[in-house]
Image (cartoon, rainbow, N blue to C red; front, side, top):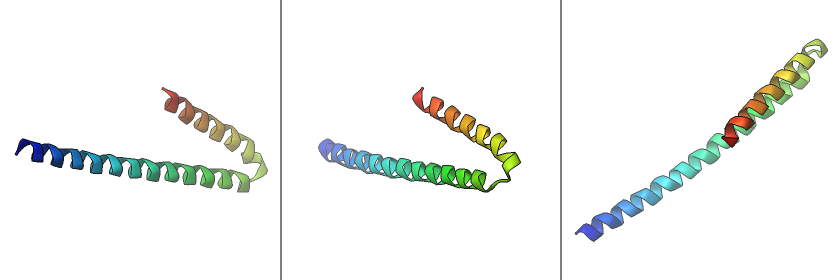
Length: 70
C-alpha cells in the first residue's frame, strides 16, 4: 500500500515539474515579446524622445539581467 502511494506521489511530482517547465517557457516567451514591443515602440518614437527612451530601455534591460544573475 505504501509503495502504491509513493508511486502516485512520484507521478504527481513529475506532472507538476512538467507544468512548471511549461509555465517558465511561457513566461520567457512573454518577456521576449514584451522586449520586442518596447524596442519597436522606441524605434517609432520621435527623434527627441528616442535618446531618452533608448537609455531607459537599456537601463531596464541591464537591471533585469543583473537580477537574473543573482
